[in-house]
Image (cartoon, rainbow, N blue to C red; front, top):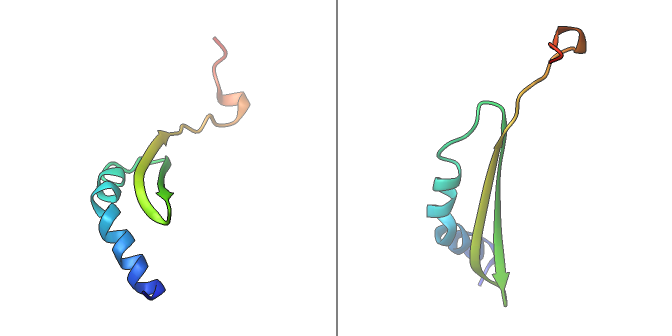
Length: 64
C-alpha cells in the first residue's frame, strides 16, 4: 500500500473528528488534534481548544 493510500485512509477514518474539532475555531487561541495509533492503526482521536486574551501593556492594565 502506498503512502498516499495510507494517508487517504487515515484522513477518511478521522474526518468526522477533525470536522468536530475545527467547527468552533476561537478568534484568538488554539485547536489541537491528536491521533493515537496501535500497531499502525488509528484507535483514538483527542482534540482540545483554548481561548487566549491579550493583556496589553502593563501601564494600561488596571490593578485590582
